[in-house]
Figure 1 (cartoon, rainbow, N blue to C red):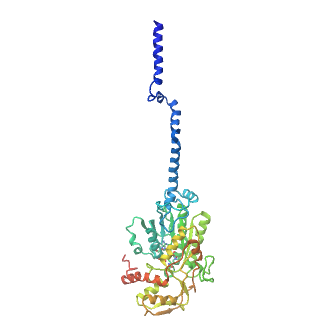
Figure 2 (cartoon, protein in one colour; figure 1 turned 90 degrees about the vertical axis):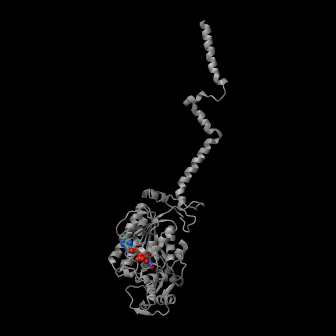
Figure 3 (cartoon, rainbow, N blue to C red; figure 1 turned 45 degrees about the vertical axis):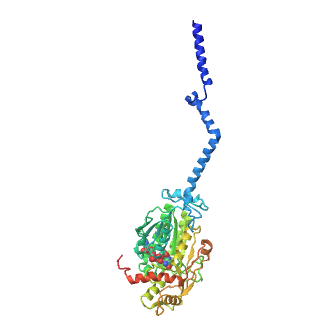
Length: 434
Ligand SMILES: NC(=O)c1ccc[n+]([C@@H]2O[C@H](COP(=O)([O-])OP(=O)(O)OC[C@H]3O[C@@H](n4cnc5c(N)ncnc54)[C@H](O)[C@@H]3O)[C@@H](O)[C@H]2O)c1
């Protein structure tokens, strides 16, 4: 009996054991035992090259995320693309952004990938040159923050941008520090005409020294690129003609104009020291006489003086014998040069000016021909330290920035006359009407 039972049980047991082998492969008890399932999942991964496809997928994904911010800075439609690019986004602190700058990528943009929008500060952006620069930066799609104390700048120069969400205006004096997260700083804040910079010389030198220091400090802190608008005045009354960037100048350090020309020379020194000592990416432009719409009326600069006088039917005042020479560049040419410099790879300094040279009397003749041929000329004694001649050698900018002015004086002058005529007719400037 016991034997029969045992036999029955062992038969039953054998039957149980036989079930899996005898059943179809759809049932697998191994799935209940994790330790024994591992080799099978690995086997699954290796089958049909699944693992290879997963690795390729991960590689493609990570390559895209690494390159995307860089590629997005390159603008295929932007004439001034960024040959060497940096990650200076707000979320990064200065050390990490410096790291990315040093390990930046370069190359052309694949079609369809847009340039990343930059956030740019323009100090002195409510002024003559600054407002035209802001227009250009906004029109190409960047965010612009203007810092201005409105000493010579005017809100009317920017009022057409007030509804634009990519534009901000801050009333601020650059002699005080300010903290903003930005990618680039165009530092223009400084009165540029003799009437204005001589009005408060101590303030002018403070703006050039403290203002430039503050903006360089900001550039260092947030890892922004910094462009200084210096001036041809750093050549003083030049003994070399035309002036190359290698010429060190002939400047009176204690004269009435020193707050401006020595101030700008100091600003250049500060910029180069921050570049060499703190690795700030610096660009220096030496701007020669520039004219165009939105220049201050009656600021003593020769083109605006002559144009305003001719429109008002007043005699054109010529200081000295009128044989001193200047070169005159139209403002859009300058703005193109500033942007090319900011986005190029060269520190400078670069002369930005129009090499066409005119005596003051020749300029008066062009103004007469453009506005009023019956205008008369009145001679007055010359001002102190007025340079006898000024003409830029722009071969360096031509070669390294691929830049040169396009607009001649005879073509450019009529472009500012309408603006001056309207403002003179309204005569609301300086009366606090806007
Ligand atoms: N226009 C030219 O022919 C020329 C020539 C050489 C150099 N530059 C340089 O280009 C820059 C712009 O010149 P511009 O012709 O447009 O002059 P501008 O006087 O029209 O503009 C200067 C701007 O800076 C602002 N500003 C002055 N001091 C300031 C301060 N402490 N804080 C904040 N804002 C301040 C003014 O309000 C103004 O908006 C200046 O740095 C000037 O030295 C101009």
